[in-house]
Image 1: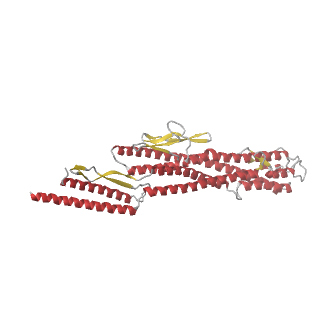
Image 2: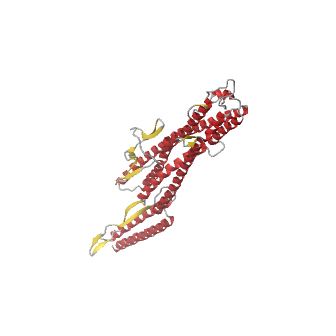
Image 3: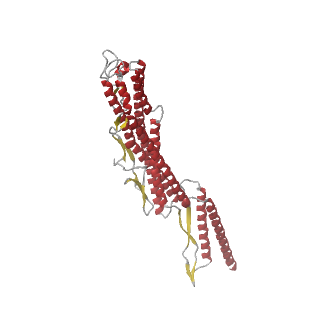
Length: 455
């Protein structure tokens, strides 16, 4: 039956409830600028009433739930945007380095070296016997081979560096999955005793976002609050532990596999996937096209040069101008390097004949590439344009995803971020309610004292 002690219990519960409200509010205010923090709230509900004659009497207030305000769907959208942004950003960063290496249009790029090489043979055709013209051909030929070698070597070095970059990203992924697994264990343990570890969940979500920037993730959560993180169907983190990953280089390709199982983790995207696409597909394609240009140039120039004649009696013939077959191996023939008289300008060795020099100069405009449909220069310019288009595409995707991500973060902030104005209002509300409950306690104390005085 309700009595004065019941009023005291109601006041006690009121004091506890308002104190929890002030604790939570002060925690929100303290973390208003903390990255990843979600606003927390105490849900106060009326406790079960007591039946009395004529109805029921209230017994006060209870804290039904203390937890964070978070929208799971928005978190999923942010992780998805992070994945696409990471992929595009990684590709843009690497392709920008490729663009800097190619350095076109410029006076020091491979395109200009090709033009100067053919121009040197044009000048040789004007003065086929002069040593200055022959030295110019040798100089431009040597410079051209150096440009091929340097560009190929730079692209190869960039590709090798990508292996180290991917390995560093895998180390970060392994670190995050281990931390996620540890947090998951703590969260489930807290939930098992009826607690809602909001701060731990915020830390877990923050690491999930960081992980999603590196690699595409699928996150599933069970009724106990435990999550399972997978990539391409492979579980990499759960309450049972984290699966360490490593980089596997096979031939000219890299893959991500489980450190123990050796099973391949398929379809990674994010920064990791973007770097892998450049390594496995884009750079090999660029280098193959560069080799194609070098091989075509070597074959055609050598065919013409070996059929011509240099200076001397008898006039040397049958010599190739270049050696090698690729951008890495192309070089000026040592016989030409040692004696410019071996440069073939004449078709028959007759004084003043320049037919071979003219034919080699005309190679610049011959349709030798892509099924004899375009010239070497056109093919090279098309290759440079492809690089530029890829950069523009990656940059455009990156900027678009940044906008999407910003919009999603704004939506999340509207739901989860701390409003200091709102928290100050809540603090005043809880403070006044606490003061009122304290006055109830004081009043009950006076009532008890009155009863004692009556005795």
